[in-house]
Image 1 (cartoon, one colour):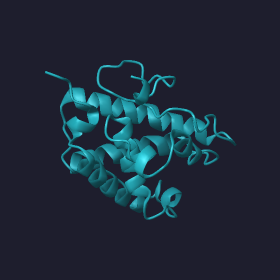
Image 2 (tube, helix red, strand yellow):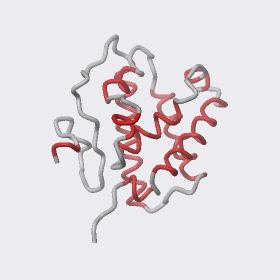
Image 3 (tube, helix red, strand yellow):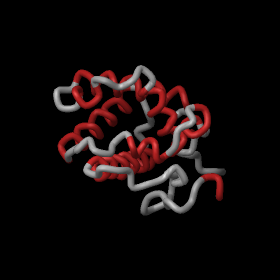
Image 4 (tube, one colour):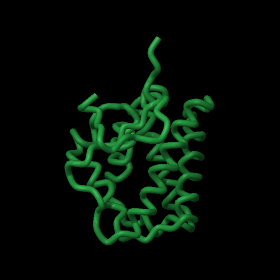
Length: 161
């Protein structure tokens, strides 16, 4: 028996697209986060679904179909001066959205999802304090899978495994 990826366990691409649609609808109505996302493109939800899917073990829709990179995602946060209160609210709304659409509530699945959200949102806050991106176009996408303690290894991409 093989262990499913977080992407597979979640339910695949349709789940992530539904999740980001529900999530960003909440964000836009939120007093704390709404203004930060007010001018997002109509494609933002889809791009984030593609990014999350790829990072969590799904197809390469973000780097393939969308032709974006990890450096691109990082660049979207640079200079935004996000704070810890905003970060916590972002994670809270994300998890509420996951519950709302019926994502698995299995403790092991949720531990992996939450560990990624905590890592990624903290990186977003850190990168938002910078004036330029700390990574270049060659920086591989994170690869967040089950059973890897300590987060993704930035020197290893899915292509080299």
